[in-house]
Every structure is written in structure tokens, then in C-alpha cells.
Length: 182
Image 1 (cartoon, rainbow, N blue to C red):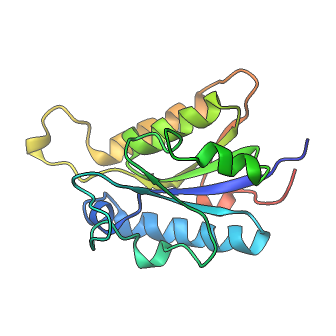
Image 2: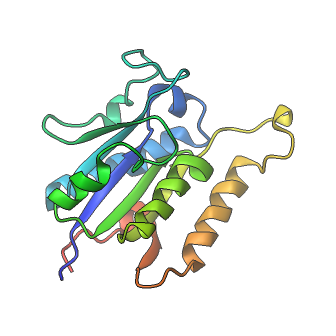
């Protein structure tokens, strides 16, 4: 069966990008990849967090302008770190004939990782975009949390080496993501 990819842009909203490590660089990497995906006919799916800290309709809840979905593009709202849980994302990807998800977004250790692993568990091949995911800036008040740059690097190392029976898992820089059908 030929590969059909979809690009997932997870939680790249004003409130999250404002606290993101290398936020501008991550937005730029995802924006460039999104434009390439659209040009190649690859669906771009925007996923938005919605909870007490990310209230529907507020400025913080809005997707950053550089990554705002285009008219007619699918948007999925979620209330947990898992972009698949109670959202209809799996059904949407099935309707689109998607066999591989390309994962980008915020936050590396939470929504990005949870969604990536759920995609594998649901039978999708996976591409994690090495420069297309980020986490929050960390300070002394964050105690035992790993510094943001180390956390992103650790998750990239995990996805460079992780094995998943029957699934293809790849880590690629945004510029190196292959968007041609296999």
C-alpha cells in the first residue's frame, strides 16, 4: 500500500508559543514544512488544546498566525495530551487514507510524545520532526525538570532509536521530510 502522509501541527497556539524554548525557530520550521506539505497535496491538520488554561476563543487559545489553518483544512480540538482521545482524529485520518503521520508541535514531553506514541499504537507510521517540536522554557523554579534544550534532544534521541513492531519510525529535520508518496 502506498504511503499517504498527514502533517499534524499540535498546540502551536499563542499561549504555548509565548512560553516555548526556541519558539520562533520552531514556528519557522513548521511553517516551511506546512507550505511544502500543502504544495505536495499532503493534508495539514491543526490540533488545538482546549482547557481551563486555554479557553476557547481567547487570544492565547488562537493558533499563531504563521501556522493558522487555511480555509477548508481540518482542525481538531482536544482536552488531553492525546490528540486522538475523543477527538475524531483517527476517523479523519482514516477518511483521508493516511498511513503515516508527521508530528510537530508543543510540548515535546507531553502532547507531542503522547500523540506520536498513540499514532504508532493505532497503526500509523511516524515521522517526528526534529526541529519542529519544542517545550517550555525552564527556570530554577522548575526543580527537577530537564532544561528545555536537553529535553528536546533526549526525545529526538529516543525517536532516532525507538523500535515499534510493524511500524516505520523516523526522525527528520523539517527540511529533510520527504513528502512524496512512497
